[in-house]
Length: 101
Image 1 (cartoon, rainbow, N blue to C red):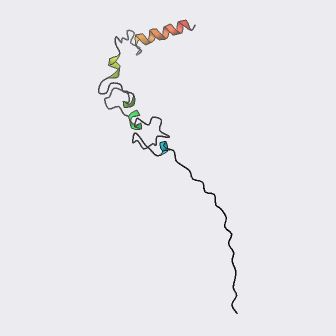
Image 2: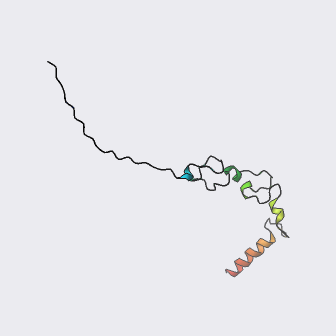
Image 3: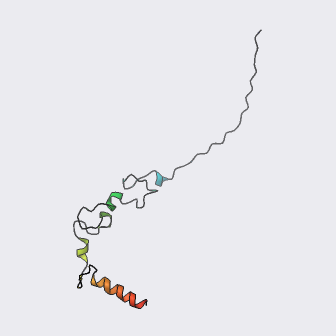
């Protein structure tokens, strides 16, 4: 004799959750390998913060005058006491120091 087994199935609804990735985590505007969502400055390649192609000691990301010494653009810059701090900055600092007590 042959035994027949009856199997019943119950249909249940399944909840599915879909996550949408924000566009800033899909794009890399400056091509530096960091997606814009975690890039501190998406418009500047991170390498620019660590390279100085014109040799003026100012990283390319902050260099206002490429292929020139940015510090040569400070007008009437003097350092009469030779301490490495420009006189105009010393005067401003000393003025603030005296007014703050």
